[in-house]
Amino acid sequence: MVLDTKSLQAIAQKLQVGITDYALLGRALTHGSYLGEAPDAESNERLEFLGDSVLGLIVVEYLYDAYPDWPEGDLSKAKAVAVSEPVLANGAESLGLPGMILMSSGEEAGGGRGRFSILSDAFEALVAVIYLDCGLESARQFVLRALQPTLTEIEQNKHIRDYKSVLQEQVQGIYKEAPRYKVVGEHGADHDKTFSVEAVLKGVVIGRGEGRSKKQAEQSAAYQALEHIRHDKAHLPPVDS
Image 1: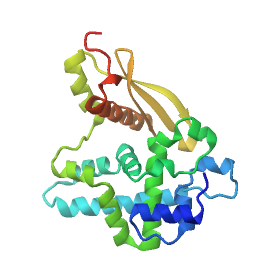
Image 2 (image 1 turned 180 degrees about the vertical axis):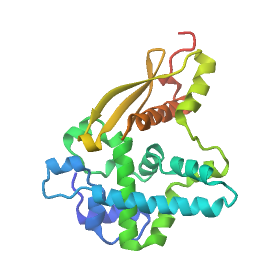
Image 3 (image 1 turned 120 degrees about the horizontal axis):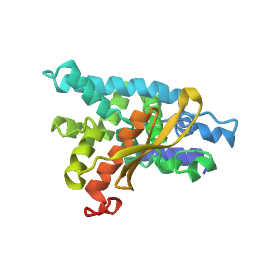
Image 4 (image 1 turned 90 degrees about the horizontal axis):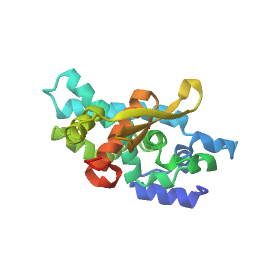
């Protein structure tokens, strides 16, 4: 896949933002693994670094204004949910980013287009591009629109603050057994590892997740398991097993 100017213009139009710096947009959609196949390319790592801070500011400002009676602890927990990898990955998927990201053929073959870490990084990099090219107000509008489902859950006090605890509550009453979490892989440099974890119930893998720490990966696996419970019962073991 090549992100030429025409493709980048189409992406910018699809994202409904006034991006004009298409070179910067292309960089936001370039995963580090792609540099092994295109050494002259630039990865989205620096943009992701900036986007993480811009995103955090926008979410914190929104929560601070929206919930004037909430103590600092509740605001911190809500922010942690709103900027978590699964939520940002879902935001990226809703924008169609998985099919737009440049990555190595090996990363793609290994399921890279579905990795929460890659999708959430691309989302944060995109926030940085909008901030740099269009300004903070445009970035704010974009973030609040993209994260609206989660912000609505927070408003209704339905947001999940601890996916592992919620999953355990849901399955233990049915199966009389709590899920187990198994690290099945890790990749990346020592200072930037990504862990892969499976949530296992009665010998059946009910969720998979990734994260920059084992705890984060476990939360991601629990989140996917909860999504399967809600939408796809085929991923669950039979109750009488």
